[in-house]
Structures are given as structure tokens and as C-alpha cells.
Length: 103
Image (cartoon, rainbow, N blue to C red; front, side, top):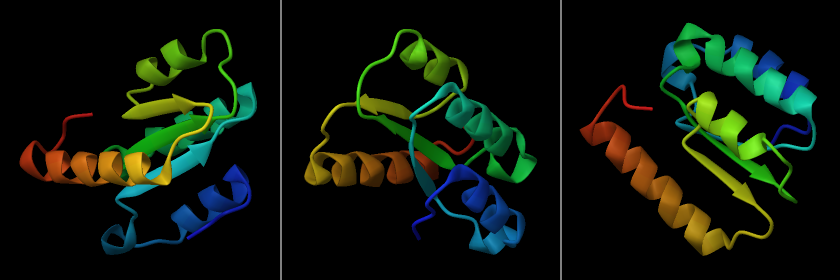
């Protein structure tokens, strides 16, 4: 699914059952407020094992370190090829199946 803003995503996630939670969230980061929203999503107990990948158009000072501190699986800046991203997502989903609970 595509959600145009993080508040819309948060609202959609609140209404999901445990069985309907996504395996992966791809989030475009454009500001510090986006990081705060992702932190709120990650803080929800049911969202702790969901793979979160952050995408930013340009590198900003401190953003990569902040993503690591939030236990985000991947953080990309600039252009990312769809093929590389799809391969990485497939690997992360498979890895989580082998080593559940590792973020």
C-alpha cells in the first residue's frame, strides 16, 4: 500500500490486526518530524519486528546516525535502483525468518 503522509500511515497501522501488519515499511524521510513519526511507529510493541527502510533524497548531517540509533534496518540517500532495493528487501525478510527478533 502507499500512504502519502506518515500520519495517514500511522492511522492505517492503528486499525490493523496482528495478522495484517506489513513485513516491511519503506518511508521517505524529508524532515526531522518524519524521524519522530517513525520513532513513534517503532515504539509500538506490534511494530518492533517490522522491517523499516528509510529513503532520503539527499544526505543530511546526523540522519544516518539517527537511523542506526532507531534500529532501522536500512537507510538510503539519493537514487536507489528498484532491483537493488527489491533484492535487499527479500534478503531482510528472509533473514528475519531465520533470525527473528534481530533488528
